[in-house]
Image (cartoon, rainbow, N blue to C red; front, side, top):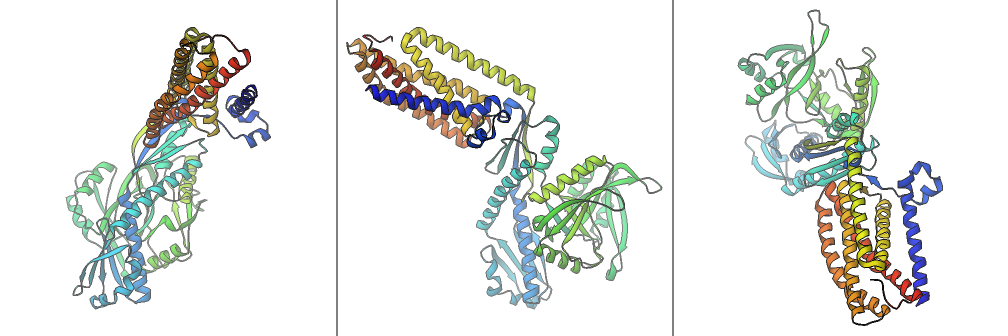
Length: 586
């Protein structure tokens, strides 16, 4: 028996040394340790958002926009295949979220849209209506495929946000998916970086190229109803083979009033009105710092998106010296860009970034090579413009979000509040620990000392395991530690009372200890198991601080079982086996 507890003691000491080794990087700092140490022991306990400050954001993914964009890409694919394989020209309009209306310019050619041609699209689309007299088809995206697109949009949004966060070098960011919501926690972030990080994370960076419908008379007619404060203007440009093209647009300094007026208009389903920004000019034509919002009347269908971008880099305009973002498309994107520009020579193409028209140049000729550029103008500080250009290039390179995000919740925690939380939480922990230690010593005497040693080992193991997993300690996590102390003591109280009962029956110290541990085990196990189930549920469905509490509680349960049953039993074996007392101090 003596040899048995001797080897157990050596094993326990090795575990304690290993635990201490895992806590060293947290206590002294990784930079103070030699490289060989950090190479083999990569453990550090990180402080959560509520302890070191930072920002907590919740975004809702607008998945219906992802479905609509996918429908546009399918439309472009159908149009391209009909053109190449069947030499057929069609006009495809996007209606609603997932309906496509295919109109054959020669109605008789609708018969060539047969089962063989439709086969590659059958897994994603259903043909719901066919009018051969008018040469029209109505196609609808399959509901199962719609759900796949929505699911992919959320998963891709999580990965895209993670890539953007990594660019800021934030230590231990938390990015979680909750249904259609994405929870982002960035601990340790400086307050001066809050706005920039929020802007870059939530920026959709959806780049779209759309053709304007300047030849329509809709805007001129709608302009007759324009309220006071909204100017109705007209302009013209050389439309090449179409001759001079005149178009009408609205402008105003009041963005809300302009949007309200646009919302009151009955815009055709296959058209939309978007805003762009310009700067006011004085009488001599010199730009002023005042912003003016200008309308653009576009075809709703997106011709090309940023999905085909392979590179985005910051360059400077040779004339103005202002930064611009140069884009390079892959082969497929370059082909689409060349086809769209060739089909629409003499028309304006809008470059739309995050639902805002960045520019709308006239297509003078077919554009090959797969390159485009986004200009950044205005009266911002040159360094701010350059920072904005680098941020835009970065989010375009990391990938556009597959769907827009809507921020639904935001919480900012300053470092001062975090320090206060650490001080108060630590004080509560120390007070609770001290009271428990003193009470156990007073009530159980010698056995109370064994319990207190086990408590210290318990705390050491919990901290070491959390550091080993590089877990994040939150304020609720500290509460979990305090709760764990009570649970650990509770297990010892059950065991000690059993030992007391056995000793009262006249049994020897060895027999009393053996009986006490064997009879108390299942009572302790049942109690800890029910608490562990609750902790697992919180860990699975909770977020942020709740997960921190649940993780600490779960680790605490495991360590409490180990120290309360194994460590204290080992110490009792040492006392009973080596010192052979006639009566236990309990």
